[in-house]
Length: 182
Length: 180
Image (cartoon, rainbow over all chains, first blue to last red; front, top):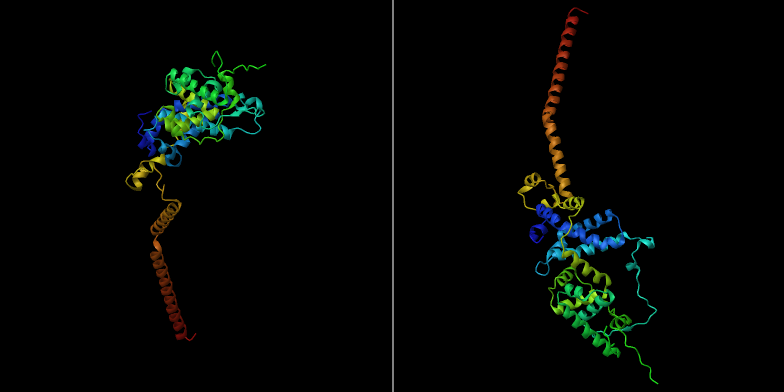
């Protein structure tokens, strides 16, 4: 996909567009299916959502495509993010207020228990990276190696980030460290 | 007597806290998120993206999903998806390329009037209709010839009428000469 002539593509060249579609369709197809998968939509919905991605790319004289900057990210990565956004937009339009509750995945129904008053973490106590690592480890229950791979760092860096974050939290909330660790 | 509190595990501590920030992080652009996924952002530039991802469970899962999809070979897309997408760009785009005049554009399959607007299209259609009508009229004889024919016909009628009057006078004189 990186072989696509972006200038010709954004200029509306038919041959370049056709080549782009052939190259990008598997990725768009995969992202749309993964995004809509939990919602058990029909094949027609998947097709329509994928078509929405292509429409959005070429709409208004390829306005969105012209915002892509190859110096900042690879085309497949950017396209995957765009595809996910389109699929979510499609889902929002598609879903109706009368949708049977059995059709809604549990994750979508999950709400925070607001009856329990939680202590707030003051702004600036943790860095964004520390908050993200703790969220992945404890909210998403991801493995250290998975998080390390996602953030393009080694596992030891994640462990260190985790450890420093917990030290700060325990110090602020005057919590003792458990003898066995987290 | 002192009460000894059992230290909470890291997970319990984290879950007892409201990890969501009081101020919702600013929305992240698709370009920024893509750059972050590829690890191309500096620590400073990555911070707002990571704050947004940490605060949004959907984005947290999306980051893993996209990284997973990008890291492995993908199955081919359905043919119908490709056909529909390819049809989105066709003559509409071809018309924007310089193609050496209206005829050139038409030969390349572009829409002749694209970009000039509906008014121009209507004007040219009216001119074309006028040319066709005029051509038809000329082939059929034209106005001047028609008038000439009318004039000629009128003249013939006039001549015939004069001749009839002359003949009539001669007959009258013949009968008058015979005393009738």
